[in-house]
Length: 396
Image (cartoon, rainbow, N blue to C red; front, side, top):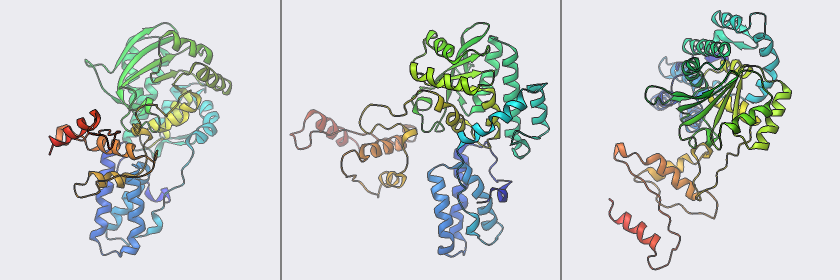
């Protein structure tokens, strides 16, 4: 689809993913109440349903205005306008934009001028601030202001408590305050600060479980001011005792190519799962019209040492690593649907069952699901078999 045809989406940028999916699903369903021939509407419905399955918010935001125009305003359905856009490689775009963003941000007035340009909705360094929705535009202004205040107040504990939550929300995290505070400062000196953040990435950290479901909603936040070498960054993280936890580093400067190379070498030598947000990347993310977390990770994680594959129970796939087979999961959840999953080894049977259990198990709604392993099939009620059958016999 030509994005120019959908300059004013019906779903404002920044609205929750669930709200976007709900609105798009309703409009797509409304197509069936029209007199449009199935052959004509079929490709459109298929595209939108695939976008719904994949939670492709960008594509859905483009489709909704066209669906609304067709259903509500009785305009002719034009399937040619429903074409999935080519996906850009975010990291490639970032690398191509770094020099122009750095030149803009390091001008005579620095971030002061950057804030003026953003407020005036000028197009700077390839970023069209005038095309952002009002909520997203204000969020960018708040984040750049927070970054500027932190940059000017090195090691300031109170400033960090105020401004780090703003930057975390800007990246796409949802804050989970404990005793009224989402960020707790652990230690600080003149050139660095260590804090912990209580927050969640929801389902936006794909495909990195450590920054999503494996985070236990706790993130280490490290601020660096004096432009240390990346080897020094590794030493600092080790000194702070951070190990096997997600780390977000706020680096109040612009990483050079050499520093990025040092970051890769240090991270891999020390096995550091660290995502670095420097000033260049912080400004680059202002171009996003939706949640920025996936773009942030796409640009930061390639410079870290992180393995998205986690060992454990067979089939225990983190939600960030599970893709597809949604129709099979729907069938298993349906009371009148399929009730048997079969296939060869290592084809994803256990992963599918655990996916269904995670989706369906909602005790608050009096919905329960459990997965029992029965390895000794054919034995006379082994311990595992007895436990499984005993559990199912008491449930209806």
